[in-house]
Length: 184
Image (cartoon, rainbow, N blue to C red; front, side, top):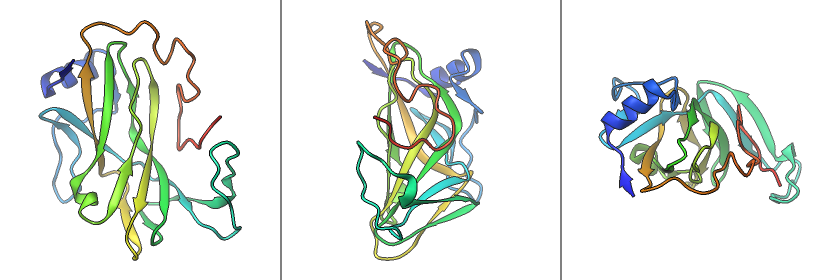
């Protein structure tokens, strides 16, 4: 398994529509950086947020998930309450090749502010907008900036294609658009 370089990411994004919209170079002019880096792609967070609030005493249960614990916001700057979290999505839509697994790590700019970005791996032949979770681990409100970098995707190319892909098994998050809540 190999980590794929910027040249491969550009080629796949252009020829195979692996990332749309695609930013060919790293942009960093007065923004949290996004675009192609040496061995990854820094994706942007869209302006759609679901901010967790416990106004209705909701219980977080992955088997019986209730939307009552969230408020929806469409905004350029999302403020996450102290010790809380928000769900968002990438601006980019991803189409992962059959012989690739993608790992995501949060941007250091957010990590240094106590904001953790969590994303599960993007499996072979998964496609969609990536749902992002921003955890504010601080005792203060935290800002997330829409249309700026949020996390870096690292592409790992396998030596051979998998026998069963995410698409083959009809994964429950296949083709997701927008911020997608947990499904059972």
